[in-house]
Image (cartoon, rainbow, N blue to C red):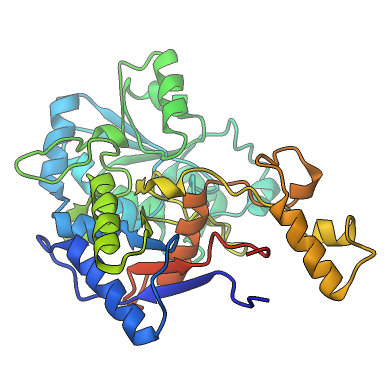
Length: 390
């Protein structure tokens, strides 16, 4: 029996700077890591490269002033409502400053008790105790403080109502119905991530004059800035005191080039993907990690699709319950080898995870690289496509 299953290896890199040849660096680092670690680079390995280093190498940055100019070009002197942003200094602080600077007057509508990805400043239990109906009740900041008192974020200790009010120089309301903002202005920026298309459609149907989602800001260069034609400001992160790093562009060409160079240099056909946030939820804080618009903006063709797996413990407890030892192993391998090409709806696949391969791999890579000082923005995943029968 082959006792080695999936292996996830963090790969260290030099400090990546704007203008660096990231294709060459990615290949050099993987080859050197494999020599140092004593493991071969193999066909169907998956090489995961974080979006942060790709955006940095591209110089894909935008300043507060450049964001402000783009916003001003779309909204002019109209009062603007900014609705449903996530609560994050890293993800949204500088974006809010840019938007605020680009409008004459800004009203910010926050969701409660938590934002779209689970950042919370009051608990559901507190809300229930106060008799609050989150579907209909609307609050000013002052009313919310009077009702709940301390509303600091569980992990960061930040009062996001006060923080956003101060850096955005804006009026704050708290409401979960996107159309509440239309009582204040018909000109809206909807800052939600995964529900943005639905929110925009609701607002337009309810009579909004202009609705611009974050993926429609910074879609082209402004005064020499970076940009992202597909995602705009979505997926951006704090870079400096006056700028953000945008989600990388041209990522498909990058992963294809890395795959081609690795094949030339190692003889192995390695699948390559760019990854951002993983898609998992913290069970204590309730935070869903996925603040990027997608887990992976680009990947090579071998990563298209979902797993098609049978559930070993289901088969062991049912079809093979009368077998043990080598007989059970042999029968399990045969069951895997003879499985149907599409197990959707089949009891043999009950309890498996039918998510996109790239979402699963991005989550694995994100947890491996971490978000701090590990220094491994590249991750090699080996044996991912091997199963018990191989």
